Image (cartoon, rainbow, N blue to C red):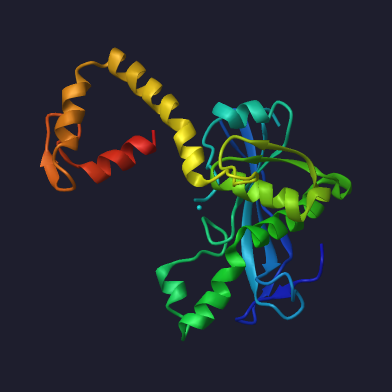
Length: 244
């Protein structure tokens, strides 16, 4: 293990600390903590922050990464071929967080902006590279799966550190990479699919048609409905639908 680092409080921190293996149904997991520079352009004198990652293997032995409590879904499928590393991107989860209280510690907006600029995708890629060379045997390349904001980070990874990548799997979150590929163009391409999925839903649950119409007629005020959510605003309803 590399020599310990020291954070801004003077506390000695190891560069990499691995926890003990533990089990949930069909999976074995181990937590990792890495001490990384806030600013990779000046790693020698930069403040240090913590990055958390969870290693997942198959059973038998824009938010934070998933917290598997059992072997299911894409994680269980991925474990058939890979050891899975779930990294809390800097600023989220158990990595050094960005919170109201932490940001209030800065004396000026400029100081805060100088700190926040180190939480962009380019620094997240550097964190991933920091972890890769310490966890992958022989510091070899690895496979990255990007969903939503992770997709943007994965494309940034391809741009900044392609030597660390064996393959990249994108399931969402693709930035404009061609002429005329605006955000509006991307969303408009989804409209027909959203309409199709809505039609399928209402054929299966026709009783919900009037409930949804009632909710959407009231603007942004809180309303009472006969749905399973008796006190519901249109904004909350839309947010709820987007999380399904």
